[in-house]
Structures are given as structure tokens and as C-alpha cells.
Image (cartoon, rainbow, N blue to C red; front, side, top):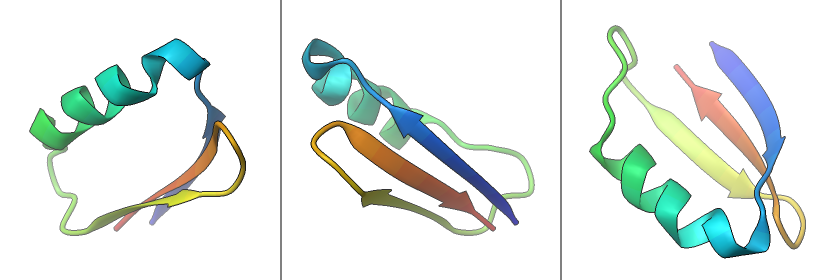
Length: 46
């Protein structure tokens, strides 16, 4: 399991989700992204 907290610039939010939706990580079976603030997120990969 990998958990990463991150903050995005306001003008990069849409681009980030476009890229992350097209990306696959070897060995990752599940992934979750929780919005924890205006531009703060928590990524959980299993």
C-alpha cells in the first residue's frame, strides 16, 4: 500500500486528473484519490 498527500496548483487540477486516469502502475490493483482541501488530495494505491 502506498499513501501520498499532495497539493495541486489551481490551474493544474483538470490536467492532473486527465493524466492520472490514463496512467497505470505495475502491480497496482486499486487506487483511490480523496479530496482533503481546496487543492489538497490524498492518493492511496494498493
